[in-house]
Amino acid sequence: MTTEFTPTVVPLRHLYTVSDAMQLLSIGRTALYELIRSGRLRTVTQGKSRRIPAAALNDYVQLLISESEATLDQAA
Image (cartoon, rainbow, N blue to C red; front, top):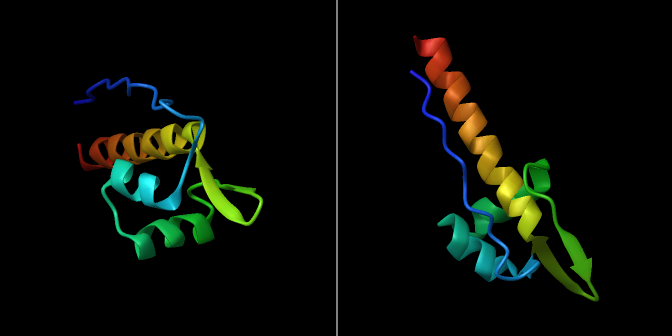
């Protein structure tokens, strides 16, 4: 059984701080930086600050949904 889910587009802003992204994804700082290190979450730098584009947050959530659907399809 596949449930279609169309996520709402995030951009209240185009770039989010690490703290903002932690809150939006409901994860801790260590988990967020692990996602960045592994390449699962894209970032940009603005001066000396690391920022997460809204599009990268949407892409990551879509990746999670796709992975979840693949897991459900394999279990069936």
